[in-house]
Amino acid sequence: MVEAVRSARRWWALGALVVSVLVVGLDGTVINVALPTLAGELGADNQQLLWIGGGYLLTFSVAMLPVGRLGDRLGHRRVLTAGTALFGAASLAGAFTGSAGGVIAVRTAMGLGAAMIMPVSMALLSRVFPPEEVPRAIAVWTAAASLGMPAGPVIGGWLLNHFWWGSVFLFNVPVVAVALLASTLLLPADGPRDRVRTRPAPFDWSGTALGTVGITALVYGTILVPADGWTSPAVLGPLTAGALLLALFVRRQRRAAEPLVDLALFADRRFSWGTLTAVFGNFTVMGILFVVPQYLEAVQGYDAFGTGLRILPLIGGLMISAALSEGLVPRIGARAVVPAGLVLLAVGVLLGARATPDSGYGFTALWLTVVGVGFGLAIVPSTSIVMAALPEERTGVGTSVLETLQQVGGVLGVAALGSLLGAGYLSRIDVTALPAPAAATARDSVAGAAAVAAERHDTALLSSAHEAFVHGMGSVLTVSGTVALLAASLAAAFLPGRAIRS
Figure 1 (tube, rainbow, N blue to C red):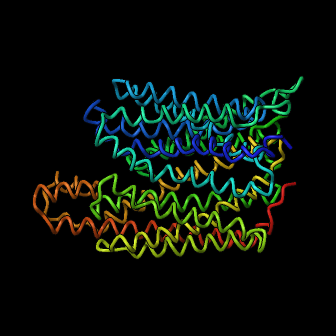
Figure 2 (figure 1 turned 60 degrees about the vertical axis):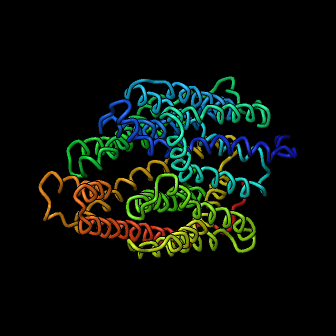
Figure 3 (figure 1 turned 120 degrees about the horizontal axis):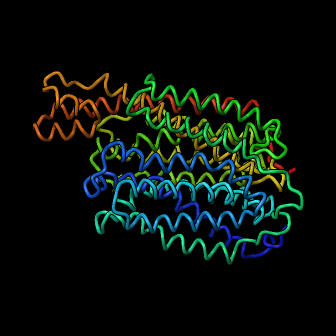
């Protein structure tokens, strides 16, 4: 075991990893509140706004698989610091770019940097901590990664209220500088086991090409779903091509001397079912984070800053359950704790499905807290089980598979749930009294309906839009809760009882 594990500085090392993943989580959502400003300041059209978010998402999803293998070959700390540096340099460039195309390019580079940070930072946990402390470290790491999502709009809203739009990029630079310094000083150096062997197996470039293009096609098609719909050729073409290429990718991985994805890992129940339950839990929470900010802002009337603050009970619940799971799993086993967490997650989500336009924030805070507790009880032991199944020399590959599946599953889930939300909204909103242009705007989104209602002083339209959105949100949360219950039943049937490093 590496000496850094025994060092009292290991918790400071965890701090370095936390700062790295926190900035990635923040940047995943901080840009959302800046999109209207970018449209005005840079003249970005709807398609360009779509790709300011989509370019980041695309490279983030695509790059994680090869990054995991490179981390195992070249050294986890090397890849982490390179990714952090790239993320910071791209952020600095983004703060001073003068065009929408430049912002898209910067966001794409930031997505690549984020992909270099996430899987290797998780892989480093097993090097910094002894096995008995890894679950606690995973809990803190998970909380940091999750905190960034709701905190992004809070920070972004505050920055835009006080500074120019480039501040949402410039904010990353000092954080990245701290992360780089802390990583250099506190993380264990890459030892001989991380260096390329004298005669390493050739890097799997064919698998990289198939996986990259396949995931790109899948994510690209999914990004277009909100604008074009599931039946559009522009969506079906990339989705079909992506599925075929990924099937070829799996075939290639079975034959490669040193595959990007070691399919033998899935033969271990700990890895396969731990990964699946983590993906299902993440799907559910992504559905929540997709609809709840819109509910709080468009229906309840909070601004971006206030909305971000009001999602924090979810993180508070996660922190509580992360501490609870550390003591519960050794006593009663992961097979009991993970399903219980998923059931609690489902209860919270299904409780949220009962929200109305007039529900007070206290009700929202209650069910978000329940969701957070359930998510933490499910995700922390699931991730610990996956980590326990990974041989030390393949932690990068294993964690990149976990992160990639969660990311792609989240993208597909948000697209599917977004379609469900839109269908529910359209089925209830009443625009019969509006002229065609105003009706089209109101049907496009609840925010559009609110703008039309304000212009026309139409309280009936506003009430109809709020009721319609809450109806669609209820459908999304009901499906998300059902997925969590399905995951709970699978976890109860197939998860091992304890996560013990082999």
